[in-house]
Image (cartoon, rainbow, N blue to C red; front, side):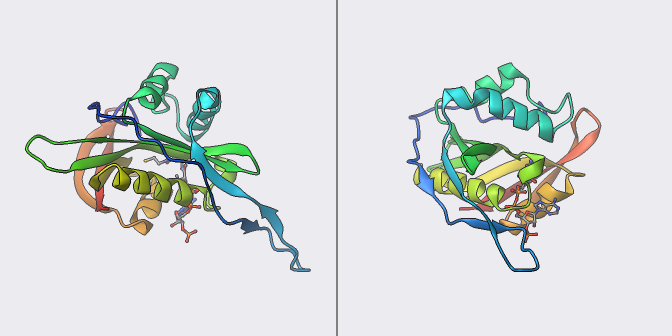
Length: 190
Ligand SMILES: CC(C)(COP(=O)(O)OP(=O)(O)OC[C@H]1O[C@@H](n2cnc3c(N)ncnc32)[C@H](O)[C@@H]1OP(=O)(O)O)[C@@H](O)C(=O)NCCC(=O)NCCS
């Protein structure tokens, strides 16, 4: 997601999700069938997490698409933002920022996933799924019945991830990223 990793900038009251724990994940089965256990959980973002979020974003995206300090500060500071971090053995390895807005004449709010990032070393081990379901749960609790997001057309892991989580392509956004790569607007009913 680039500068086009756009936020809905409307605001109401701040949403807060109490820290929740999730079952352990199991990685690296050896011949003896011993398990390397890692505990993963999600909690609300805290200001001291900021440098780690920037670091993860920069490890996930190339320059020009990764957020600047100012952009990241803006997104986590949005009054209605849902900002969650995912921890593996107490280290932050991922985060999600979501927001909500109410379109004119609509009776319900709509959610938007601004970004979801898992550090490359921790990808494909379930953190993204925990972050996504927690953010969607938060949006639903805040009155959203629909959620959308944008993704680059060539980001295959993310596309697979979103499809697995029930998102469908709504439209193509020509030259959305770096003024050259098409984006896809995807959405899902909550
Ligand atoms: C997209 C992303 C958030 C997914 O997080 P994750 O923790 O790796 O996801 P999970 O482990 O929960 O994986 C769930 C599903 O996502 C898909 N997926 C995740 N990583 C994948 C990969 N490297 N290749 C293909 N599919 C992948 C699979 O469908 C997977 O299901 P499976 O385990 O049954 O194969 C993560 O890959 C990421 O941060 N990527 C870089 C940043 C990014 O592109 N963010 C999205 C911006 S639009």
